[in-house]
Length: 388
Length: 144
Image 1 (cartoon, rainbow over the protein chains, first blue to last red):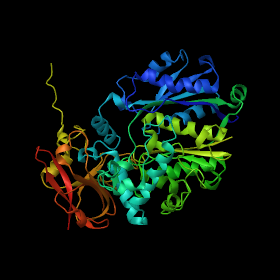
Image 2 (cartoon, chains in turn orange, green):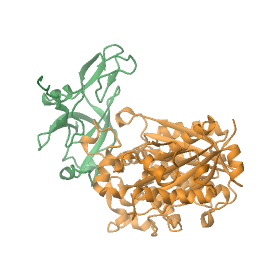
Image 3 (cartoon, rainbow over the protein chains, first blue to last red):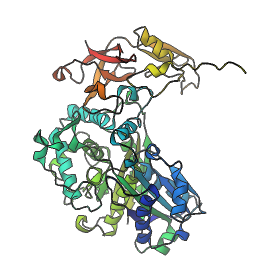
Image 4 (cartoon, helix red, strand yellow):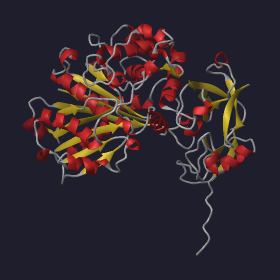
């Protein structure tokens, strides 16, 4: 059984309020991936639709999308692991192809978060945690990640300034990304000006500038067997390693609060499968739903030792010119975070880097890239390693 | 036609807004009414669970007994929320937190009225029952 490759990647612009329905939103990412792959709908054997269902009014979107995108009568189904849904979709596509059941699979991620109000959306995100034992206390995603931030600060001396540096890096590249929802400059000084919106409190110690924005968006990844990839594509990008993990949904069931065990576990699995280590990674996309999440990712992926993530951002090693460029497309902090579409967008960025097609954010000659995509508050973790 | 059996939905009283009404651990609410915060222990293997659960995944049995959360736990971490989900607006600001009791941990809220600078990671706190203005009941962490 041969390798599995990615032959097409696409995403929509990530926007505040998409002026269309979910099937039309899905079409945007799909169209771009299909043009990229230069194939037709007849070439696709199955489609996997990825999103977090609590934002959907449509019951079972897979059937609606398959019809709208011309993917009948091929099988289609829905997969969900909160914010890492489309990385989980890629994992399933890999196994479907590796098993020989299918040869070409489309992984379509989407989220139209603006179908519901922002506070309703926050309530739903809180219910991504344990609704029986935690949500009755009034929990929200930023507050959970804030608890990790406070523990990290206490254990390792990480500061609010370090977190601000991560947002400043994100904005440096977000300004260059035409598909990002947030494209304004963000300076370090904004965080020390109490009147500036960036410094506004959300859930201590996290501020407005530490949090990514909700967005509407879609993404699509076309995955193919070795034979089909070679037939259709001049420059397929190969899936070298896949790792996935889960942990206790209730924080009371966890033991680590300075990092995410799922990221560490998924990374170890992906590195082993790929036969590479952290030093071999030339470019990475990590799940920076909050600034602290990116900093913990540096450590959980082995780019830095535990507690030394702050040194990487202080020395700008995760900038485009640094030793391990991270989120040079602006990350979730700038692009926005349309839950089900996010993983596909991260994969798209790394694929374009490996093909040398990343334009102004192109890193010099990368050979191996990594995608770190987390669902919930470190509840689900997916790490994917890609190579030329 | 038989009489419809009334649902045991005691759990809808838990917290500012409860998202669950029916659970096999409904007695948790009765204990709260008696000012006790309780977890469960597997009578087969002795494993302690907080939050309480009805079933033991190790023994694949449901032989649970209740134990009281007593003494103090260490504050692992916390966050003060300035924005809340729908239904929690009137509680703001409030702090969610995690206490480590050694054999188990407890997730909940820090009691209102504690100054910011009086809260330190690692401090000893106790878990006490708290009655909410809307008739609901939960538990909070208090400095000792």
